[in-house]
Length: 106
Image (cartoon, rainbow, N blue to C red):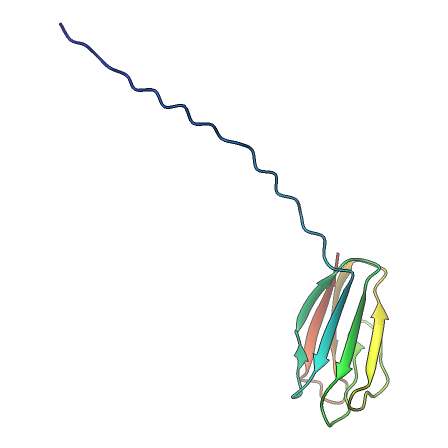
C-alpha cells in the first residue's frame, strides 16, 4: 500500500499599497562652474524654482519656449519663476548656450 503525503504551505501575502509621491512645491538650482545644478528638477504645478548664480560670470535663465526669461544674473543674484501648468520646460543660459537643463512640472 502506498501512502502519499502532501505538504501544504499557506502563504499569506499582505497587499502593499504604493502611494505616488507628490513632487515638491519648490526647487533651488545653483549656477556654478558654467553648469546648472541639478540639471533636471521636478516640481508640482503651482510650485516655483529659484536659480542662484554662484559664478563670477553673468548668466541668464531662458526657456526655449519663451515661458520665462531672467535678466543677466551677476554673482549671488537670484531669479524665481512659478510654474502654473504641468509640462517639461527646457532652458538655457543665453550668454553661454551650451548650458542647458530641464524643469518638469507635474
